[in-house]
Length: 514
Image 1 (cartoon, helix red, strand yellow):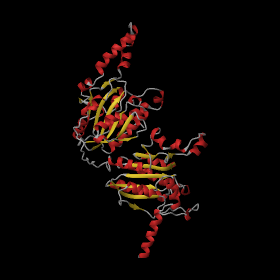
Image 2 (spheres, one colour):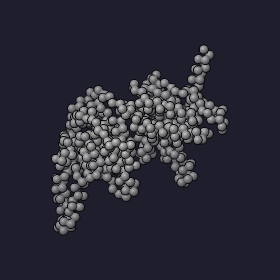
Image 3 (spheres, one colour):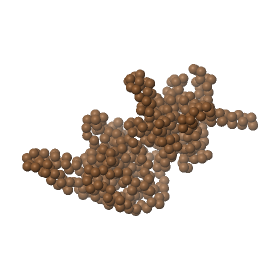
Image 4 (tube, helix red, strand yellow):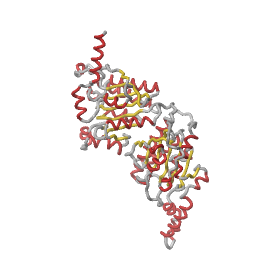
């Protein structure tokens, strides 16, 4: 018996070393952590239970029969994060470059199956060069088995991916199917084909970083939601993100005790809107002045910054926040921001997270670039998402709410539950100047002073429409509130909606304009 115990311990020591100490040292020299070190940092101390530590590949060609390594390049199992169960897999780049084999895929699929059965989030630490070439179709089948589980898990349990290193080929599709993707600046990259293939096919000279680095995917493509400064920063971000999410789509999320008084007023909000409607202000300040303790976890900060999305709490309740940002493009909706907002709202709806929307939007961005890239289709996505959502929806119009953009930003007409407006709100088809240029086109031509005539008419239009009172008279706005009391009104609205029940017509699924 003692000999057998010694043998097991020996195998465990061997499995822990992965591809060997030399490769581990090289990883450390680059400032990166090993697959196991990342899990140790992420999970509560002593909570990790590992699966399939001794599993090896089955390939018996191209010399692979002489290269068996215990664990076969991925560490899998479960543990807790701040006391909550999560399932995890962490790819080990010291073993065959983290490439995926048939058995590697089986290990990942096992934890994904258990996660969905037991209603717990699954978090994947990715560091893989793609499919293991020596295994051919088996590795491709393995990837597809994982993709299927990503799809089946979608909207049932939260799925989070962290890219710690090289991630190419089939390895990028699983993260793309998950809910949130985190990358590490100057260390991680994602692309379907590397710089050499790009050069051969398109004759473009491009570096790895410029092709698929964190700066590209967090700001340009929108594939990644956060660019971390280090492995530790990435892990801490995921831990904070998890604190706002339920474990599954059936869980009634716990309301955390908050010492931040719900009735707290903030007089700074009474003067945050500039006198001139063309001057900018920072919507993040509005958010931080109203949420619990001023804490706001932004998602997709660098991508389409004219729309803000992220998580916070009101009275201890976790909520998703969607807000136009006047500091960028005047808060206008465009292709990227529409897709960004739609995806976030649909995530919140999947997991019963209420959405609070702050509106200051002059419309959709005009121009050939937007039209050619599908602003009609993409703008319809955010409209679809808000209309379809059955979660509690609270909306606050702070300033401009013009045209179709008013309609799509969680208006009462899209089943908004509680819709407030500040006294500074302007709700109209368009801005005053543009409106009178259309309404009085003929009259202005015949006027002695066309500019003065239009200016006077714009003033009249503003007095009539650049306020929230007509919308309030129609019942499209539930109340016109003092900005300082925004927090209190939102907390009360969320309390009112705590047991909300709503449904959509029975169907297999809708056909969102993709």
